[in-house]
Image (cartoon, rainbow, N blue to C red; front, side):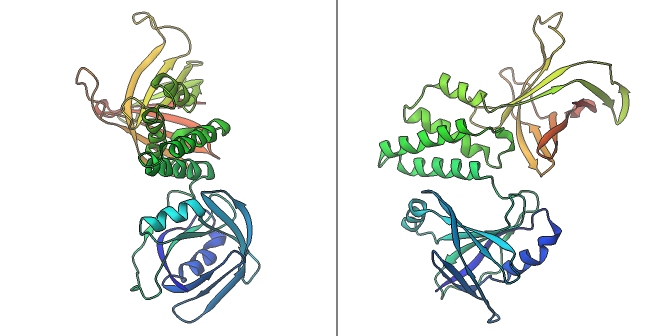
Length: 332
């Protein structure tokens, strides 16, 4: 048997699952026996938890099992797949596993398996703002990490993994800003260039398909928290957020006038692209803040936006011009 130790916990979005979430946390520093068909855990206070396991999904990256608690409530148990498990062992890392609810935004409790004689560990990370990383993102990240580890010793296999990574993103309808670890996804495109799988133009073309677009029918303007104008009875704007592939970091945020070209600039760009990073992300809101400077040395730090979500769809977006105390709320 091995010792099971907490790494990270997430209570999820359902209060009804609190007792299950707290129960799984008591597994910390207990002993575990895990096979393809059952799991047994003996806790520190000598209580035994047992469940049969049924494998419901498997690929080279992960294995997902379904089990049940004593009251019949189902849970998911996820562990690394064979290839990833071997890589972790080669790097001297213990195997990991996660207990979670049956929905993507339910509780998640992540453990590491260590030698049974290892000292007990009480510290762990708690994350209340993010849910289980999506299956698409998890697989995409694993493909990138695996390719990165193989690029020097086996370039052909690294290319194969990046090819799978590209296909995965092509086959799934995603908006990359909703990913938790976007830098890992961008790095996949960097590897594609280094491995000569595609040129920079092709990489940009693919990234452009992952951009977030929001078409606003009207907007409200606030100055120093006072509503000064809007709605206007029709003032369409297009807001676009695209990964900043040139910088390999963050995003570029651009706002377009959907009603026609600017009389002086002779294009429909309302706000030129601003460099921004995600500074906070919750189930219902994504906050981005400007960073760095443009080619003329002008700072982006006084720009920020928040993307407000309802049931994973954009409800509205706010643009902040912090140095001027201006907020513009872009409505659906």
